[in-house]
Length: 238
Image 1 (cartoon, rainbow, N blue to C red):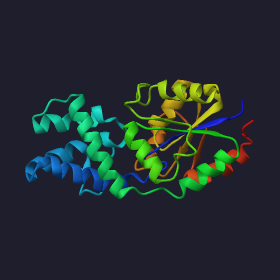
Image 2 (image 1 turned 45 degrees about the vertical axis):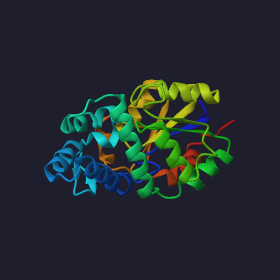
Image 3 (image 1 turned 180 degrees about the vertical axis):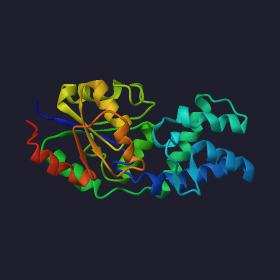
Image 4 (image 1 turned 30 degrees about the vertical axis):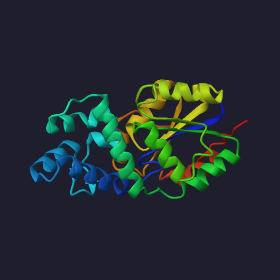
């Protein structure tokens, strides 16, 4: 079966996770702590954030939606873990990540090349959809993306198959004509759950975790190697 569409994960695949989210999360947590060092340390510990620079293995911030990783923040702050709180956190993180947004390689060039070859392209993330669209716009990707979905888009969050199925419907292909490209075992599981193929990239903060999950169809260093892999695999749109 040919590959006609490519669905990209965002953070760790197109966006440098630690350089973008490390300082962004640190900034938001300091704001939430309101000058209390003890409260900040508790929030950082719940996030697996070390020195405001990188995230420990297993950090929920790395691959879980806001409704999961920010729930302990609400408890620490004595706030309800409700949609109002999560929306507030999404807004703060959107603003903070925009200030530190760092790409991996040259995603604009890679995605433009793939779009020019006829592939339909999409973006899937457990981040908020509004943040994903904002990041895509700054990175110059919005004009080549046919589909963008976040945890709050109504299709479910990874590893649920809903976002992949919705992408397939949006671009008029079967899920087995899609390859999901991502940096974590969660991305590979999402692909498998939807009947899609999976390519793993080693550019994320916890790429070695691939070994603990379902096996991808291929592993490449970064998205910069994806066009060459597609050509070698003789997987062409059409």
